[in-house]
Image 1: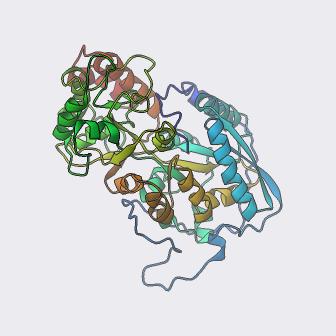
Image 2: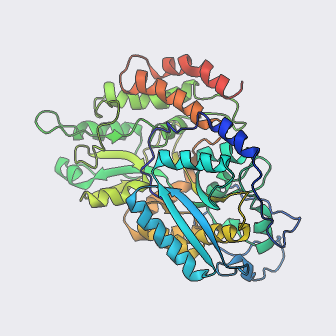
Image 3: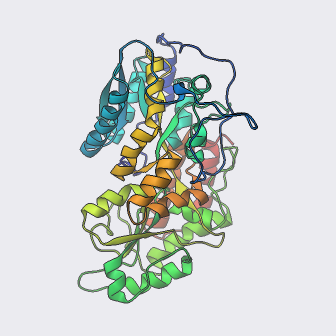
Length: 465
């Protein structure tokens, strides 16, 4: 849930292929879930409808029947203990323990050992445990990294279990389900939460400037116009705008889509980020810094969140920052990201729960994965406000109504684009982000188009072109 690690993904993934190859040669015992049918459901891939009810899936025209196995609390296997691993900080440890406690109250036969590690340590430990054939029974997967793990045959295929229990994936945000659906159409994880990007604004600063608050009618031009009026130099500097430039998720990927461009093609092999339209989106962000001078020049290593520190009037960033900004005592509002030439767009990045293929308690692991997406545990996710619940009903009826701005983040799913997800994502984005950081954002030695043209050959090579 916590997005403390939404920073450059300089993961220790360089050796991922070597580690996984070592792991594939091990002889981990794979438990076969009971009562596995041969039929498999077709996963939903449409944009999520917030009003869609959560109910059992059924063949069109058929009369739906209740299936107790689809609900949490239906586990009938032996008493067992499973290991659950996720990334986060001390706060996340507390939050995840609440999730585990709720699960164990519903499934007392399944004990859960929780492990929470910081971002880099988490992936290092996960890779080592997969290579050694002793990975956690359930672990959290970041959407963009999913293909790197799924394509190496380390994740339990949930599709037969979904069919066996009559579990309704349509009750979950469709983009979240899509992100954990492999090229073969099978589902290898379920989304536990989501994060979209919106525009935070400091009401006190807007009131002092006599400006109307941002709303759904804002465009790039309105953003620049307001940011100029809110930028105050001399003495205690106040910037009109702030965002993190070190990861596409925070803002610049949304600008690419708003300009009508994209990062890679649907085949995940075609490079699109070097197009004129994509470059125009990134150029807009560079201009906010060096041309319009409404945003502080980023510095290597970062200078802290200027909005959180009371030094910026607006911030484009993720839903995970709500608790942080509340704790900072900021009187803030949330509006949709201003629309670009091609209209509205924002980024959505699901995180999911997956089960280890070598688990000796596969049915219990599946029960935990399934329960995590149910109303009881998803309500806890909603109330924590550290991320958006993946369950549609809880998202619309609990999270969206729980604070000012909740509906804005939830509604953003209707025009959101999935953060790119493909094998080799980390190497690709590291090369791309290094180019943008060094030549576009941290200084303006190159225009966005020139920088993208420069790095394009390397990116194409990484995509296998």
